[in-house]
Amino acid sequence: MSLDHNEIKNIVEEIVKKIAVDNYATKSASTGLNTGKVLGKGIFSNMEDAVNAAYYAQKDLIKLSVEKRKEIITEIRKIMLENAEKLSVEAIKETGIGRVKDRLLKTLLSINKTPGVEDIQSKVYTGDKGMTLEEYAPYGLIGAITPTTNPVESIINNSISMISAGNSVVFNTHPRAKNVSRKTIELINEAIISVGGPNNTVTTVAEPTIETGTFMMKHPKVKLITVTGGPGVVKAAFACGKKVIAAGPGNPPVVVDETADIKQAAKDIVDGASFDNNVLCIAEKEIIAVKEIYRELIDEMQKHGAVLVSSDVVAKLAQVALLPDGRVNSALVGKDAKFILSQIDMHVGDDIRLIMCETDRNHPFAVEELLMPIIPVIRADNVDEAIEMAYELEHNFFHTAMMHSKNVENLHKMARKSNVSIFVKNAPSYAGLGFNGEGVTTFTIASPTGEGITTAKTFTRMRRCVLAGYFRIV
Ligand code: NAD
Image 1 (cartoon, helix red, strand yellow):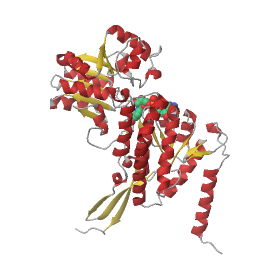
Image 2 (cartoon, helix red, strand yellow):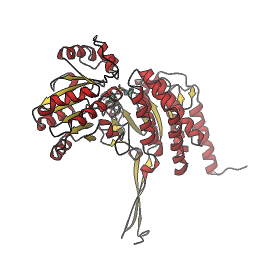
Image 3 (cartoon, helix red, strand yellow):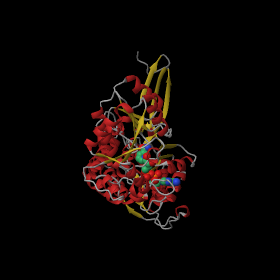
Image 4 (cartoon, protein in one colour):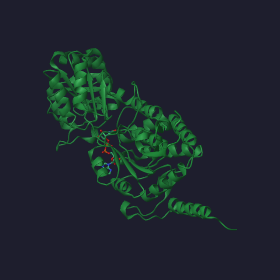
């Protein structure tokens, strides 16, 4: 029997792939892990194996038709919907962050409103000179790092976007959310395999650490890095010297001027700032209200589950919410308002979802991204001062800002000054993610690198193909 060149090439490729994926004793000094094992669908004991498995899976993924890719995405959504409640509860149990009811809504949002393959429609130009086609091609293997605040939602959102674009993904998930992240990744793989897609299209390690994350980002087979987290991981990704899509921290201000519908603004701010205990990076983190409506706004907010605390209580809260060195106390991130107040012996009912503190613009509660249901309320003399303070407190993250106003001039001024990726007017912050708002969703808002709302198209390389003279029919 004689084999032609292509048949030999295919056999060699298959063997190389098998060695990489099934290598049970891969040495990886950089990860500190010496024995490589496959521990589940897409779950590996070392990062080298997780990278290799996803790398080869992508080669199979791009051999499939676009119709098959659509089928894969539909099946991922279906299996995730079936498991949404269970995963949301488990995420909160494992991380100790957030509120179950809100978390489920976030998970459903990521499943239902992350765009799929339809996001990467090709473009064609025709004219006197012929035809030019622009197509969106995959990068190959993407290395993604996910946060503790939305572990399940980020993995679902990134997987749908990246796979729709023809990529595979190796995740390094947050160590404090590793079990629920692992389960999510296994379920996504099961969904893909069940409709004939490649095994290991998404992979991870069972024990993610900063070291496995660094190893992954630097791995030559990883063509694009996508990180979702705080300033540390963004900096680490940039240091790897390759293309990065970075979704970093925010500190979104909300400005309320004298023309706003105060009743509506008060309800919207409480709803947005207390949602999942304020862990969304886009959630209102400080309120800046002009003096004419300042008191009315606070009074109205108290009708919707916010409590105003005295300056003595603010001082005590600062002692528990911040560490002695001024950093945020991560033990209180994403905790219920009731629990946080109980830490200073103040007892409130379950109806209290948000703690309001009257502070000035320099208070650490305004300056730091707390990720807790504690919100400072700052008084401004006029709308121009309010917009200026909002700009300063956003720290040039270019992330998110909100405004409640009926004055188009003021809204325009704030939109231009803040120059953020998401600017929400007269609605809770989450409307900016398409939740009770128009537009698609994402859980990776890439402000530092400028992509903003990431979708499948974000994870593609644009390729142009030009044909001179022909295929012009007008
Ligand atoms: P985090 O920065 O502590 O962790 C995020 C991820 O990065 C984790 O997987 C962690 O293990 C990893 N990591 C951290 N430092 C690293 C380093 N030096 N090298 C390699 N990996 C590293 O953040 P978190 O507490 O999980 O999440 C909250 C933060 O994420 C907030 O700042 C929030 O604003 C931000 N966030 C942003 C978005 C967005 O879309 N822009 C979405 C969610 C969360």
